[in-house]
Structures are given as structure tokens and as C-alpha cells.
Length: 498
Ligand SMILES: Nc1ncnc2c1ncn2[C@@H]1O[C@H](COP(=O)(O)OP(=O)(O)OP(=O)(O)O)[C@@H](O)[C@H]1O
Ligand SMILES: [Mg+2]
Image (cartoon, rainbow, N blue to C red; front, side, top):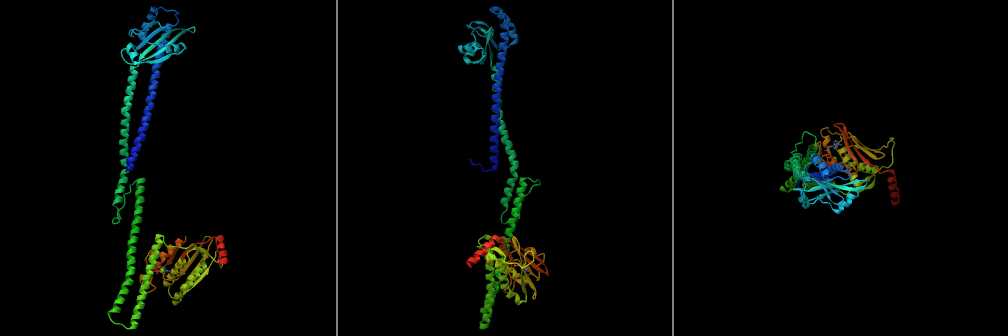
């Protein structure tokens, strides 16, 4: 049988363990009690035998009558009516027997005799048939006690007693245990059921609520109890997870809406322009102009689709990235030269410097990663710096090599970012100044920074932005450098192959 609930398993285990323990304990208790009672019984038989020995001894030869006279009275007084006494000579002649015995003598086997003669008192339980012939009911337990005089065996004193009371007691104890142990197990099962219900009810509630939380009702939350127990912690943990799922869902929805919107705008423009062009015959200059405009829109669409593809690959971990040593200083120089034409259109100068710790100019800085991806990151950031700077300003690019990390700062004196926008600029499609950045061929899509941040982090680095509205923006990139021994190796192999 497979148990489907933890509750059933817990109760089952609890009852099994409790039942086994209780049974073992009761068994041991019964066993010890039975042994102790039997020992006590034998001891009292032995004591009685000893008392009789005391009466018999001393008289070297006692007449049967005298002994009977001696024994009979104290006999009745000292020992209960359920004591059966017999004194026999070594040869087996019955010297005396208590009156409560039937006509048959207490038996004495040759083994018992042999044992008794070797100075032992012998206990035996008479079988039922023998006992029945001697007394009316019950079993008989008997001790055979040898009496010596000057080391010569003289008599055997035999005392027997009915074990009726003892057997009755043991039967009662057995009955008590046979009834009370199952009852205790039943009570334990019921108690377990009750306790487990109390313990698992909150979990059942959590299951029911969690089941009712679906994509449509993601705002529902589990009740967290006031006491900080496991269940409350579980509820809180699940609630935090639901928060994250809800946020992820929201972002997903927003992303789909934003992406469609971003693609729809250039497509609508494209469609409008082509429709207008087709509505009437045009001059060839008009066609060229319209086609040029169409190409611009198509470029924009291609850019968005490319960026979306990159993002999707980045998020699913499918973007293939190389892991090669790169000269970061050269890479920065490259990105500066690739963007400086665009910058000079607006008379913006880009100044590139390398500072090492002491402020002196330093040599090569080597990081590990994908050259193309890192180049696109810096071009993207420089593109932002230029795009959001005023004409005739200066952009600074500063590379500071460190022991473990190289820092790159891109500083512009542009429009800056307001504190309200700053937390969102890494969100996809987020643009602080929409009017400025979304129109025209250079208009941004708001994906550049989120992609750049992803790429830098994939290189084990960080990307941060500080900005003061109206004053300017500083973007800081931190990338782990290859250790000097590794980079030295790289340089020698470069030289060998180059
Ligand atoms: N150097 C900067 N100065 C001022 N604002 C900036 C700067 N860099 C980014 N921003 C703001 O952050 C927003 C997001 O930048 P991001 O690079 O992601 O998008 P974009 O430049 O608009 O478009 P894309 O880079 O995809 O072409 C920008 O729209 C802009 O408002
Ligand atoms: Mg950008």
C-alpha cells in the first residue's frame, strides 16, 4: 500500500514504533514479574520447609505420634490450609503427612532423591494428574528438603502448595496487558491523528490557496500566521516566490507589449509612406526620397529585431561567447575611434586616458572574454554619451587598471538622468527622454543598456551609472583582469604566433 500523505505516514510510523515499544516493555515487565513471583513462591515454600526441619531436628529418633503432635498444631497456625506437608525417611517411609492431603503420598522420584541427598533442596512442579490425585484443584509446586544429622541424611521434608493464586494473578496481569496495550495503541493512533491534523491543517490550507493562485490570480497571497513557526516561514517564502513570479509575469507582459509597440511604429510609418507613394504616380526623385526613408525605417526594425534576438539568446543562455585574452586598452581605443566620427558631427571630443594606481600612464591591460561583445558594449555606452550630450562638449574615457579588476569610466557632460528615471534605465525599452531618443535613425530603442549590463555581467564584471540631471552622467564598468602570470603567457604565445 502506498501512503499518499505525510500525515498517514507519520501516524503509521508513530503507531508502529509506539506499539512495538509498548509491547516489548509489557513483555519484559510480565516476564520479570512472573519470575519474581515464582521465586517468591519458592522462597516461601523453602521457608516453610525450613521451619518444619527446625521442629523435626534435634530428636534423634522421634516417634511418629510425637512428631505429629508437634507438627499438627503449629502447622495449622503457621502455614495456611493450602500447604501440604510430608516427612519421609530416606528409605521412603512416610513418617508424617498433613491431614489436608488425600490418601496418596507426595511423590518422590529417584532423581529428586539423588539431588536431595547431595545437599540440595529440590523444587518441582507436579503435573496436573499427580496434583489432582493429591488435592482438589490447581497445580502443585513442591520443595523437597533433606535433613542431615552429623552429615548423615535422616529425613526429607516435603512442602507443597497450590499455585492457584499465583496462576490467577498472572492470568489477570496477562489479561490486563492484552487489553490495555491495544487500547493504548489505539489511543496513540487517535492522538496522532489529532496532533497531525493540527500540524498539517495549515499546510492543507497552503495547498488549497496555492492551487487557487493561477496566472489570472497572481495577486493572491497565502495567510502568514502570527507565530513565527515553520508554516509561517513556508507561507512567507512562498509569498516571496509569488511576488517574484508576479513581477516576472508583469515584465513579460510589458515586454511583449513594448516590443510590439516598438515594431509597430516603424512598420506603420513604412506602410504609410509606401501607400502614399503608390496612391499617385511620382517623380523618380520622390521615389528615391521615399525609398531612402523606407530603408531608414527598415534599418530601425532590423536593429530592434537584432537587439531582441540578442536579449532572448542572452536570457536563455544560448549566446555563444568566446573566452579569449583581450587588450582592453586597445579595445577602448577602437570603440573611441569607431564613434568619434559621429561625435565630431556635433563637435564633441572624446578623450581617452589610462591611469594606473599611481596616476602614471600604464601599459597594456588584459581581460578575458568576447572581443566583439565587449566592443559593442563600449560603442553602445559611447553612443549614449554622445547622444545625450550637448554639442561642443567633452566626453572622457578613463581606464584604471587594478590588481584584480580594471575600471573604465565614461564621463559625459550631457543632459543627465533624473533620480526617478535612474532606477529604470536598465529596464528593456525604457527611455528617459522619449521625444529625443525615439525619433530618427539614431533614435534609441531603450534596449542598449540592458544588453550591455547583461554582457558585462556575463564577463564577471559590473556596470553602474551615476548621473546628475542637467550636469552629466558617469558610467562605470568593472571587468576582472587576467592575472599577470596568465597574461605573460598570453603575450609570449602572441609573440610566438605573431
Ligand atoms: N549618458 C547618458 N546620459 C543621459 N541619459 C542616458 C545616458 N545613457 C542612457 N541614458 C538614458 O537611459 C535610457 C536607456 O538607455 P539605452 O542605451 O538602454 O537606450 P537608448 O540609448 O535609448 O536606445 P538603444 O541604446 O537601444 O539604441 C536612454 O533612453 C536615456 O534616457
Ligand atoms: Mg543606448
